[in-house]
Length: 345
Image (cartoon, rainbow, N blue to C red; front, side, top):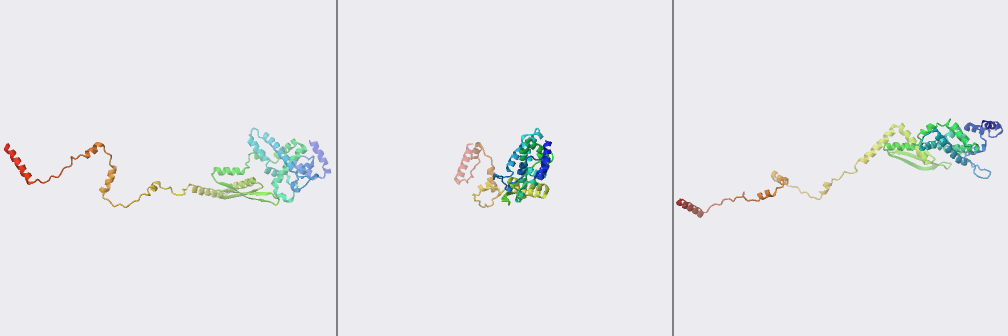
């Protein structure tokens, strides 16, 4: 392989693209064979180029191919690097390595960004443009040198020199999920408020999302997709929660006020017994003597009597008539009777 590279080096002085060859060698670790593939990989659609047949000439088709090759190559590397790990872990790690954000940073770190040809007004969308160019470059490597060259490029140039695969694998990048997990553990209400998308001069939509915790405004994030704006807002809010104790105090104070209001009764519970007696008209009563006042209570408290006791109460043995005065005739008759009885004795 080094012989072919030496031949390519010897041909460089006779090529018009000497500077491009040299720059690509620093990035790839080898010299291109078909330079046209790499030129196309670095050509953004904003340039409006067309081929001899009038078809658009840009890096979109190579980007499609490079995306598929990257999935296969990185999947192979991750599979061998983490023996025994489950499918979910492997999938998540591969997704992090080939994410648009990661590829965009790689393109910037390796100097690919400076080689991209685009119109001036497209530079604001760098995160996507750089990542797309990286994928297109992988597609060009595949067509120029084959699958194994792509594998060597990712292993020797990327994972060995630029990216630490272990740190990427175990790094938490889903900031929204992390924020939601924190809010659920602390039983805190959280809301993602989206603003109306605005368009840049290039026509690309920009989404804005603000995080509200217990009604208190957290941080705002922007992105070229709703998901990206949610992640950015969540990341900034997490950083604020860690750095500003006053913010946390305000959040939990708002939570305390909310839960207190939820626990307080809206109105007093009605007295059902009193409600049922409202129809009775009460009249003022004259004060009674203690004995009279106590009589009803005593009657009410008197125990029930048996039938025999009730019968005794109805007898007249204890009732006697008052003796009346005797008449004169009755007195004389009584005296005569007494005298007569004495004579007989």
